[in-house]
Image (cartoon, rainbow, N blue to C red; front, top):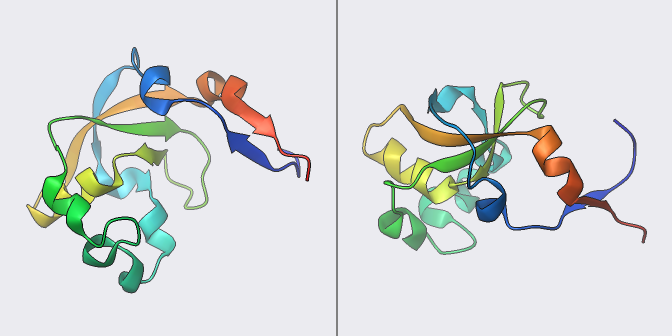
Length: 114
C-alpha cells in the first residue's frame, strides 16, 4: 500500500459480470454506513431520502470486494447498500453477493495527481 490517492474508473456491474456468487453474512461486510451517523443512512439516506430502501430489487446480488478494509472484515461492500438495508429491515442476516478480488479491480484504479 502506498500514499497515492486512487479513484475507481469503471463500471462495477460490468466488471463483476462473471464473478462467483456466494451467500455472505452481513456481519462479515465492511460497509459505508458503519461509519455514518443515523441521520445519513437508511430512511435518512443522503442520495435518496430513504426511497432506495423501498424500491430496492433484493433479487439482484450485491457486489463485494474480498480483502483488506477499514473494519478488518473479510469483505467490503461495493454495490448494493440500499438492497442490504431493505433486507435487514425484513429480517435477513445474509444474502447472495458477487465476490470480486482486488486483482480484478486494480486495472480500474487510477492515481489522481492534483
